[in-house]
Length: 192
Image (cartoon, rainbow, N blue to C red; front, side, top):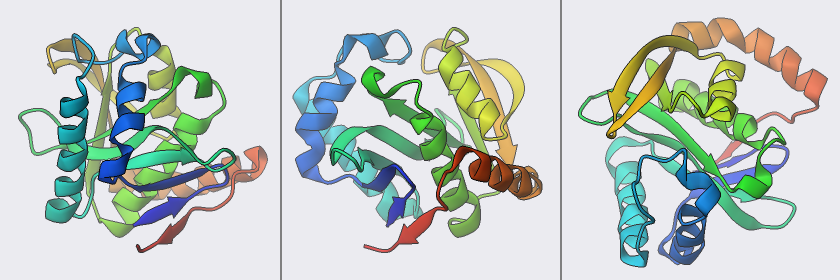
């Protein structure tokens, strides 16, 4: 399953992505916002990719590799997994710092939410971030997620946001109007 937006291609991870993902996960600017206490080793990154692949096979959802179309480079990931010790579906996203501040996180998050609600038929999607991660909180707000509570997951105090299918559906008109204003293309889904 691939997703195309105006500037991004989201596709499932493949084992050959391990070196690029390793470099992304070990970029020091990202660590202040991640739950990992230390950088991932190469073998841990390979295992993570296999977890991403397995999640797709078992649940029909998972984490996509985010490719910037212009340069055809892996710049991060965005997608779904189960929130720690729950059956809740968590949306997460991570981009290299060099790609922050351009709306790419929001573009990717909107695309995966569309997949989650319209294709995977999820009823509720949550997202969490450390309170100091203002950029991530803004992405959650821009895609229509609502604050629910402060919580503790992955050994961190986090802010917990949620979006239900009903709220997403009532928010579609708003998002379409905003996309026209910001000149975002419509999402295209393609099977692989």
